[in-house]
Length: 459
Image (cartoon, rainbow, N blue to C red; front, top):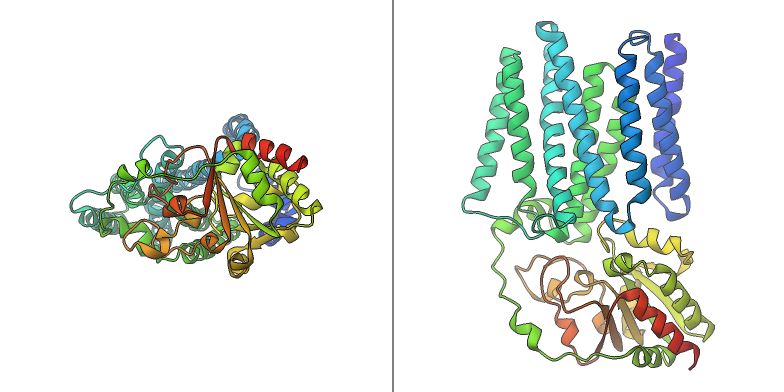
């Protein structure tokens, strides 16, 4: 294939990536954007076989790797539940960063002393950031999958250890650039893997989505740097897009959580210890039955539904749509209050509700719905906790302090659908559960909503 045709097709793939990001910016066009991104990736993958210097080389290895990737990736993507999607994103992101680091190491070993200083610097950057992304993403996966504690892991002198490791990474990076040897590069990779682990351990469960977004940006930068090492323009384009979009998303998520990125990553080392909540479990709460909830809803004029991770776990999105339709048929104003970080990743609730064909017009962002809570008769909270917890405003030092929340406490009545009194993902008590105007309906969200719908139909 001529270089002109090759570059032209590569440009087409790059355009697909750009249009994909544009499509993913809105729920209505997200599916189209995802397909465009997949098309661009497919074009880029096939195009590699027609690069003049690659033709006929290592075909068996390349095809074998593609087959293995398809065998692992397709079933994993098709079978994963929406509740586990953030873990999958973290895992795939980590694999991407690790792969870029490995490619850079292999290319460096192949070039040897003939590598220019610019290529060596790009290689060092790729190895450092790729390894940090890989090991850090593995830790975020383990936290989200609850294979390890979701609480921040802190230890005496933790920030000093992290800083010391970072100094070691920088020092060995200089060694690699000066000596251009394989041994220091391997040491650099090992130190970078360690730094990735130390970097993520102090992050609490509620902040893990922010770190996933940050590591995703890291992976994009790694891919862009590896594109420079490999002289692959398409990798530079794709990596830069991922890095830029990931950086913007990280900043927006940090703002939505009401804290700085530094505070998110290292705030656990300076946070004040939280008192044990064991005594709070003995405090009385007002629980109700599905009939009680149905009566409250039936005589309301406005209802705001606040979905959370519990809705995703119960797969109750279709039932909540049925409930909303029933209330609307009775002349009740219904809206959905969507917190920017509800669930475990941005857009989590939007995707779930879109599966149930909930009208986009009913979805209200936090800034839009908060002023309406004083005029709301019932706030129906389905599996959410941290995003409505008043501690974010009243308890300095708690893991979510400073995070903007949905002001459901201003509604006339608050209904919580919960499995138990267990705290949310941040691991702190929610005082709103003990408010006299709060009614708790215990049980699986889907089963509880089904009973509420049945009770409403006879009122």
